[in-house]
Picture 1 (cartoon, rainbow, N blue to C red):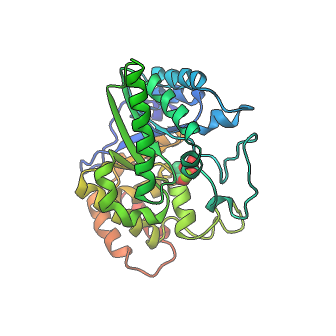
Picture 2 (cartoon, rainbow, N blue to C red; picture 1 turned 120 degrees about the horizontal axis):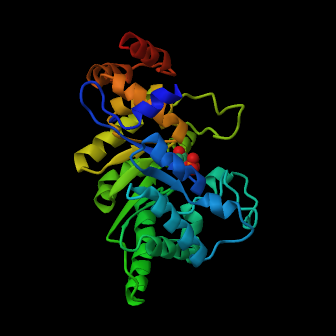
Picture 3 (cartoon, rainbow, N blue to C red; picture 1 turned 45 degrees about the vertical axis):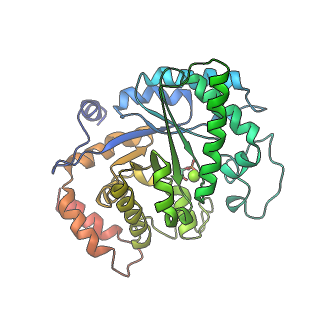
Length: 324
Ligand code: PEP
Ligand code: MG
């Protein structure tokens, strides 16, 4: 198998009927970066910047962050890297920075809500990213955006930092692409206002499933109760994909869902053409893509989405087996 995936590394992630998928990798540690090249991923579709924050005893300063982000970009050697701004709170707790006891941390003061309320933290991180990407391309994505106004506010902080760097005479990145995660269902109802403001959108299927089904992602008693291959979840994603396609805004899925072959197959049928998955999933997902005929699946899925089933897993699996 290992040899098989090694041969696969340099082959394109194209379906049998000629749709191409960009297969990106999720990362969160410098250590992960070695897999970017041996897996043959097209880039880092999600760099979770909070892990280094969680591994230390205090917030890293601008200089420490700059050095880390620069190393990441160096190791990417020109492949794109999407840095996600600090996404702490909820299930990701900073040991030294947990000021409130909350009844519902997943719905609480977390992620972009913290960094918009504590703009110095966000500004330091964005400054470090701008410096690390000086003279290169920088991609930044903001997590847990629930409404367009939050994206606008985060962008304003970025613009302040860009201006700050310019005034300081520092060389800026040659291109700065700004995107949003879509993890909170409410944002999907503001796509007309949102899409003109972003360069890309990435669905975080872990949090999205949590909020769409109102099910705690970390509670083993119920986290298995709903299937991401439910008509509701796939219809939701398809409707987002249709709008992004119409607006010409690239859409990816970067939650764990994208890394499982049957789920990845279903996402492609929904019209998602960028998947960001953990490094061990690159080989299995690429193998699936190269054996997939997406045309007939897409037609079949359209009929499945109208069913009252709890899960489409068995039907999708049967389709996958019947079609090789
Ligand atoms: C997600 O929610 O799907 C996601 C990719 O972000 P995280 O798992 O880091 O919350
Ligand atoms: Mg998330």
